[in-house]
Image 1: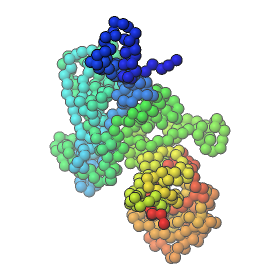
Image 2: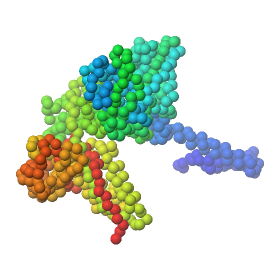
Image 3: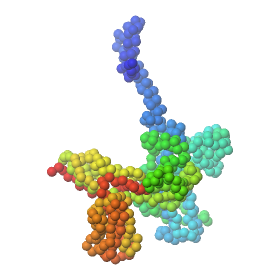
Image 4: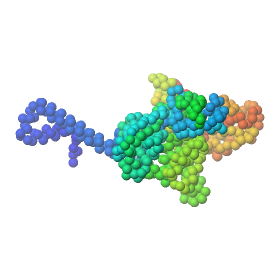
Length: 574
């Protein structure tokens, strides 16, 4: 059976063939104008067929090519496509420039209170108070401008209002009706006619958001004359990140003490503001929505918990495991009952700065996911260990048409794109063959010799004695280098090296007798008998070493790789 085609030429041919079979149309085919008319009609029919095909494709989740199509369809998956997410970090506020002097009265810092770095605004994410007993207070902020819109209700069923802003921050907004705070919900159909709830939906065009109220049966209906006030943050998303600390130093809003008197306050950011995000890409929506549908936004499995936590704005990386994985990691039958582990949910989580969560962030995370999880779950946070990678690449360039500096930059970019902590995840091992292929495929590279070392930092546990476990093993003993730095960690000095027997020998001026490394397990003991004069608490220790295996395989679920540094040499063929 032949396939019927709907391109313009095929349609035109079929029309002409059909007309030729009818004697009354014979004269028609003799005129060029008539043929041109027929060709034009065929083209329009082909466009119409193509458009219908396009619409059909856009109705299939796996084939849709427009984000607007997935936005319309995602609600059926139970997935609310997130809007832009503002970069988050922590601010410190005080009434003194030294951030160490208290004030006679409490000073409320209200939600949406604004600060800036002179270019980008930062808003407080909730109302907090600088107490008269404290010299300072630290709290969360999010990048964006505080905005508000006021409407008067018409009293219609399913009344809705459009906010013409394509940058409404995903997580921080409030809506009041007659000065009463209403609750944002995913769907009004889960609530009765007395519930003071509303929906906030992103328009498929992504250029606005739509506030929707109930009809009196599903969600409370607005009354004519009701005053609606909507407060929100307009964020730059990924363009609103602020690197480094002590950059946010301007107070944009006026602070008042509890007596109502204006007061001067000072601000600084104690962390960078990172993890600003734009609307998810087409493929991110296509991938995540079915997973949310499968979880029902309920944490009934470890994958469910991971999916829910990943959607929190202040989380960048997360790994979740339980007793099943615990048993496998400890070479037990996966179904072994362990009373001490049965309901424990282990979490390894990195925040917006790609650091371990602060105690405040841990509390906020538990509060954010509690209602979505099994009430018997016991959450336990594991401290994430970042295994820093140091790359050495000696590459020969294909020919002199390639600029050496450009090829070096290409290699550098390849390493960062693949191994920077922003671009790598938990449970991701590094296989040497894959690493070699990445460099091989870098523009301009003819061939190369490359290796990967690891860096691990620690401190002395007592006077010039340190016990630690290097996270990757077995270890090539002859590759071990031991560095010492003062408290600033700006300058490192090589003080000892290892050998193939795991013995660590001091460099000139340093006696490290008794220092050893168990190469099979990574257990390392450093004893500095002479050569150091400051208090042991003032020193930091850095181990740089290679594994005896070229493949780097993580052996703990709270380990994650992170790019550290690279030495790249490029040259033309001899």
